[in-house]
Structure formats: C-alpha cells, structure tokens
Length: 351
Image 1 (cartoon, rainbow, N blue to C red):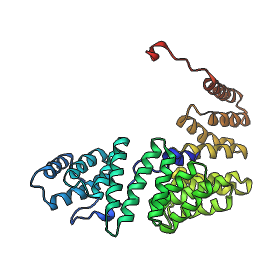
Image 2: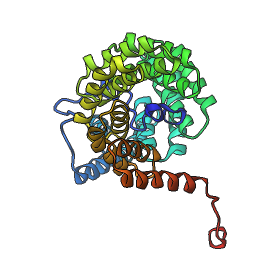
Image 3: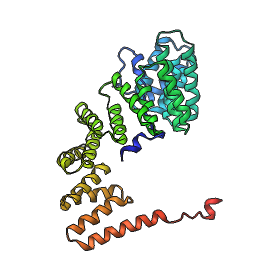
C-alpha cells in the first residue's frame, strides 16, 4: 500500500530542495515573484554579458531559487549554468545547478556537478563548510540511489551525517534508504534523529510510523500516526495510515478506523488504498451496500487490480445479486490469467 512511497529507489523525492532559500537572499525577491520565460532569458543574457556585476549575479541566484521552488527545473538549470560560467568555484551555485539538472532528468550530469560542489565545499574554510558539504553528499546519494547504486548512496549519507549530525535532510534520507534496504531499526533511529531536528515534519512522521508498523510495533505506529494527524490534519497520509492500521486491529477499532479512512477520502477522493480498505471492512462487517460505492470507485481507479473486483463479488453475493457476483468473479479470474500468460516477443520487436 503505502510502501511504494519509500522504496529504496525513491528514498528521497525527485523534487528535493535542500534549504537553498536559507542562504539566498535579495531585497524585494521572494518565492511569490514568478518571473516570465522572457525575463529568465533576459537574465541569462545579462549574466553571460561581460559587464555582469555582482548585483546581477546575486539577483540571478535568487531568481534561480524561485524557479527551484516553483519546480521550473529546466529554466533553473539554464540560469545556474550561466552563473556557473561566472562563478565556477562557488559551491552554492554549483550545488544549485546540480539540483536543477537532476530534477530536469539528467542524472549523470547532475552527479558530476554534485561531486564538484562537494569538492569545492570541502576546500572551503567557511563556518558553514560541514553544512554545504553535507548538502552535496545528500544530493549525490539521491542521484546514486535513483541510478540503482544503493551501496554508494548509503556511504554518501553516512558521510553526510558524520560531517553534519544535525543535517535534517541527511537524517531523513538515511532513514528512507535504510527502510528500502530492509534495515528497519537503523531507519527508525534516523527518523527519530530527524524528528529531534524538526519535530512536526510530515514526511519524517509518516515514514517513522510506516517503519514502526512494518516492525510490528503497533502501539508506536498508532501514536506516530496520531502525531502526524495532530500536526497536519489537512494531509491524507496520516488519516490513511491510522485508519488502515486500526482496521487491522479488529472490530474494537472498526468505528475509528472507518472514520479516519473517510476523512482521508474527504481530503483526497481518489485514494485507491482508502477505497479498498473501507470497502473490505464494510463487507466483512455486513455493510455490503455501503461498501459498493467505495469498491466500484476503486475498480475504476485501478481496473486491472483484482482486489476491488474480488471484494465486489463478496458484497454482491451477500446482497443476493448472484449474477453481479459472478461477473466480478469472472473479472478476477481474467486478471489472474492475464498475469500468468506468457509474454511473447514478435520478430518486429527484436528487429
């Protein structure tokens, strides 16, 4: 269900933004200022001109930060590329260039840039050297994991937390990677450390709860999901996680579990997991008519998943709708058979 969110290949979100805004400041510039493509093109020309002064370059750095936060990664990469020509030894510029490049889908180029940012930061004598070095290491870890090298990613993250133990992104990413690699205890330690740095961070709370749930520590998982809901009631993840876990605990928790899943659907109506969990629980507790709307919607969302069709067949059977039950059972059979069917490769595909 929620496990795919924190697999080893996606342990840090592609849109990772490691506190660039914390050290890029220009008067009058804010994340609310959305430059047009024409303005970006003009700024790039200004940066590349021989008369580009410090004010122009500083403005470009701030605008690049706005583009990152707006997820306009291709434009940000172009802007930071121009800045890198002027400031090739500025670790902030090179790191930001790497970040934009990675999020533009060019992982190999981004890794080279992140390595360069790491080397530049390591040569610095500034007081923020550990933070800047750790920033680059976290980005390198993200890139390496996405490219399939979890061992190298793990080393980079362990180096990052050794250099900067209070680096939140390093601790969070370490926890997510360890979870994906099956080291639940290590993941829990990293998530707890991250939460000492940012106690109400939604991702850290959600991932901690998910890991606690997988280890079988239901009491801890319930408490963490409740903490997530208390801090971020507007997010469906906490309600979904708590509701699904409560339903697993049996009839005594049915009412609260249904309530939490219903709340998750109020926030995000197309949650497949919530629809199926609600439908399954309602069928099991003889509320088959109420279950139909959730299971039918789940089948629309994921038509090739057999679970909602199977639950629909049970619901229809309990309601005495034998033909509908048989039709759903036939769909389940078809899906399973299609998954077992051998995959043939045509000659044209080989050519």
